[in-house]
Length: 186
Image (tube, rainbow, N blue to C red; front, side, top):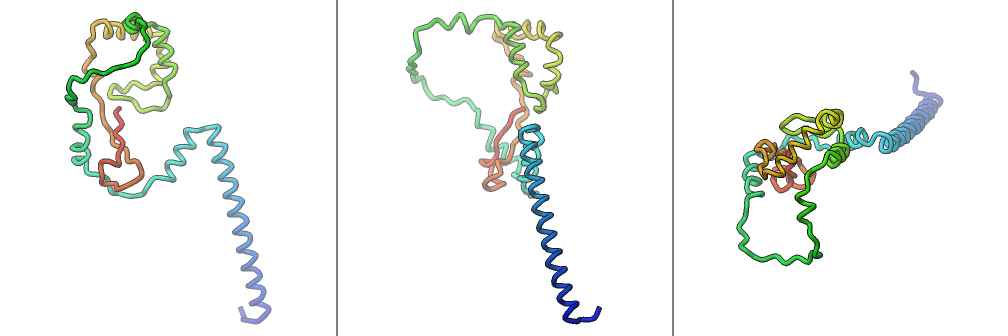
């Protein structure tokens, strides 16, 4: 190609048109993405938040040392002896003994199971909320009997007292500092 004034002018014009088309298509693409994300937020919130969280994730390989996290969190729930201070409460004079010691009903358990959210992580028992919801007709009498047995005996099964604690980084502060993690128990 020969460098003539006409060719240089044509090249400059074509370059400007190219940049204009790129800007217009980028703007159009961004509007389309914003529209899709807005629709996703109302129609499919779970996918929306997964997408938002994937954008916000920090790409860092640094994580806090598990020994430091363990040492920091091992005493968080330790029983503390605060003495025998008497606590004064201003409760109405009602008899709540009857309500607290009433047997657990199938309706209460059914309502609680219906309120469970799908898609949550299972505990150490690997029983999902979805499984519980679909098994209500079969499990409801057994669950009612089991919960009432625990209520009446006062003995809580050991397996109900065990959990797996997962530290979740709060996305702020020093990643190596245990105070910047939220412990989630499964």
